[in-house]
Image (cartoon, rainbow, N blue to C red):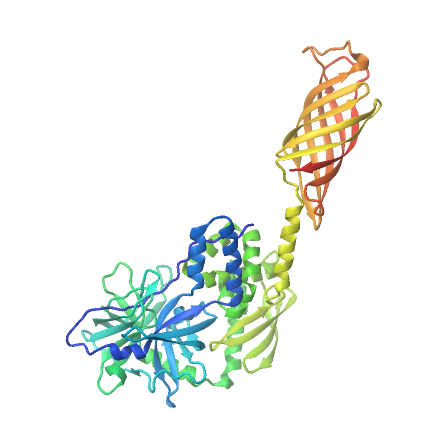
Length: 560
């Protein structure tokens, strides 16, 4: 199937408001601490979309090409600098800002327009549940002496709060600073209409929110701290169909996450791995599709290295429900949709005919990389698990998700070879030798239209037969050759000149026939084929005492 592209909808939500108030301190100093985060994607995902873009450009799909270019620029969000006890700088942001990223950078913009970008940020840890992530600067990079301070007390309802970051205006990101107030100091709410699990607590506030400012700080004015503001929370989301109902992860939740991320306990790594493996194996046994479950365990490298092959497999083999699920996920996260494709390919490879029964057979390794063998439906499947961003995730899984580029090359070679096996045609012309059994040899010729109908003729020394026929054909492609058995039913003109005085009741001799044959096509010469057939003339509408009953033929043809 030709690969295609759907519209990209990158989900970002956080707040930034601009309400000039005389009581608010100057926000200029905050620009040194609050930056624009830009993510780039795994090189294999970039390469895959470059191929798709080239195909679309060749087809004249300029809007889709522009959409891919926009996607490849990378999604953006906001973040801010904090420091550890030794003065080392880190960036705090939301998990969903960096969830699709392979590499990250942060840019700080002064009031005079000067920009400073720091590349090579490394994700130390992220937590999807609390929507938090912490990033480390590259060695030697330290933008500020001391990062922003966390507020040491709970916020109060009615208290003034401020937001800062880089929401978008079209495809451009612009610094904004704004003011609001706390409307609910601690609120929880269900995850969705279908899930009553409570999220939170969050700080609800009225500062303006705009897409693109996810991960930016929610601030309160404080004396004797950098820039004159302390971090009360991290702007994370806003409510639809509500006026100025915006939500931030509280500072105490963020501080606990940062402390845990910066002080990991290696002794607990194996225990965390065992818990993840047990959860993964348990989820495989569901009585429904489990690829969304598998996707949640895939590492960024596993998704990137296997995305092209997996997406191709999904487009070719997945049922309509899976394709719809892929499209829905695409609207939320392009890389997340690639993860669905990889996960579906894994499920399709291990499921077999029924439920998946998975048992952990062996775990070996050390530090932050382990080999894990699962026995799935009686067959051992090896996998590699790595500790990515502080969470154990799948690096490779069996042979189907091992980053094997030969799978892509082999699939492309098969696709090209299949295209060269030209079994489909608009017009096919063939000619050959026929043996009119009991009557002698004849020349044979035929032309077929769209595989379903055609005209054929036999010309012998004493017999001429012309049939119009309908055809049914089955194509079986075997590597570089195709075998196409077929049957036809025809009605036509039959003139046996040894009985030239005999006519049908309609004034000319008629014949009905059935033919069964087979065509052989090779990829070496696209369109060229050879064939053999046997025909039986079912009915002669004349009184010929010795009619032509059977014909055997061989032919060569070319399909256009």
